[in-house]
Amino acid sequence: MSQVLKGTIASEGIAVAPVKIIEDIDLSFDRVEISDVKKEIFRFEEAVFVAKQDIEKVRNKAADNIDEERAAIFDAQLLFLEDPEFIGQIKSQIESTYVNAESALDDVSNMFISIFSAMEDNPYMQERAKDIEDVSKRLLANLLGKEDLGISNISEESILLAEDLSPSETSQLNKNLVQAFLTEVGGRTSHSAIIARSLGIPAIVGLSNLRSKVNDGDIVIVDAEEGLVILNPSEEEIKIYKHKREEYLHNKNELLKLKDKNTVSKDGVQVELGANIAGPEDIENALLNGAEAIGLFRTEFLYMKDDRLPSEEEQFEAYKQVLVGMQNRPVVIRTMDIGGDKELPSLSLEKELNPFLGHRAIRISLEKEDIFRTQLRALLRASAFGNLKVMFPMIATISEFRQAKKFLLEEKSKLEGEEVKLGEVEVGIMIEIPAAAILAEQFAKEVDFFSVGTNDLIQYTMAADRMNEKVSYLYQPLNPAIIRLLQNVIASAHKEGKWVGMCGEMAGDERAVPLLLGLGLDEFSMSAGNILKIRELISRLDKKDCETLVQKVIKDCSSEEDVINLLAEK
Image (cartoon, rainbow, N blue to C red; front, side):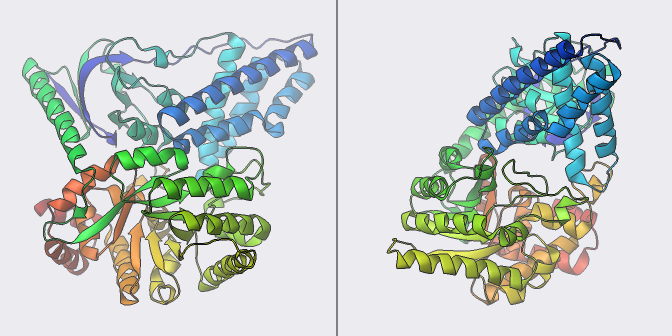
């Protein structure tokens, strides 16, 4: 008799295949006293060298097969392998206690992991704990001469099952053979989940103790549209889900017919669908998926590639390449958003107890004026080659926006004095801080546009870290409080004749789209892979009906559950 389990959808799709259970690699070792310290340190340094090479290969493969943004996930791991405090403490442990490298690594890494994992109010440090764990396992495997899990060497169609998959493991999955993956832990916003969506591999996570319920080779059904895993399926269930999978893939191909179409609602209201990108290399994929714009170019990834800051010329070429590639379609370029979960090897920033609420984004730009002005000059020079819109992130006060715009206008004046050809540039802000959302009416008088960063806006409004499983239930995009904030932002902008975009995950959430259309959102920007699906959905929606739906939410709903139930009725 079949058994149905419910998990968290990390990446949509349907799969029917034998399960391949990935067991944790045996990294057990004995604690040994050593006599030759230099030899042991050399052995450790060799393991570090090999680990660097391995991670760089994984990073490059991720950049080629996925995109630069996902590949940048591995930069943090490379930084740990170059961190004198982490690596230095391990060497010191070998020297002072005469233990083998395995023991020193285990002692130091466990200390770091324990400290960072205990910081439940600090998502940045908790993420670093996961990076240390991944790096430490790789180093220990190198020291013990153990092979990796062989995930990249899967030779037949399979559904992978593991306790968890690290970003490096996920990025190496062969999407032609791996039909889906299931993990016992994890959430939708984990790095592995994000990579799975980029690869188009169905995935369900948070399936506690699943490995104890199945055997290697068992046929399993994964319904990552409903979040269901069916164990011991009957022949009839297998037949039904194979047909469902064919339908799913057929519908996916049908969506490609919408690639060159405008995004228009059933009653003729046109909106714009854009793609979020991390660099020029993502333009081709955006256009293949029918992007009408670039709603967010995350420029910080240009800064994270090397151990030095990018020059004005390097930035200019990158911005120019994107503007030319988009053939005069709108391109919103966000000035660097460093800090929080993004560190720069080339910029020494003090460690903070709560970096997501600390020194980051525009706050760093206004302080590091020379770095900011270099970026602004590169952006202004590139404006001659397309339809550029510059966006400042993490704006909390009017004075911050005015200061940032002042720098931009000063650099514009200098370039005009040098007789550099410039184009027209709109200047806007990212709405991700509740203070800015509440004061949208005042901001709208001075900016050219808003783009709502819902990922941060939701977690700041709900005071809940979306990466923390203990409070993930509070990450509620459809909470009436969020809907009311968005209503204020969009109405305030439209009152002043300004447009509003959205570049957070909510823009690509099918449940939220009717509400966003009803609120009057002008531009939806998302992962390129979601664009055609959202275009098809909007073509079936009547904006007037959506406006009525919004009014019901504002009037009658007091919880996200109320909103979800109301949407289900429609």
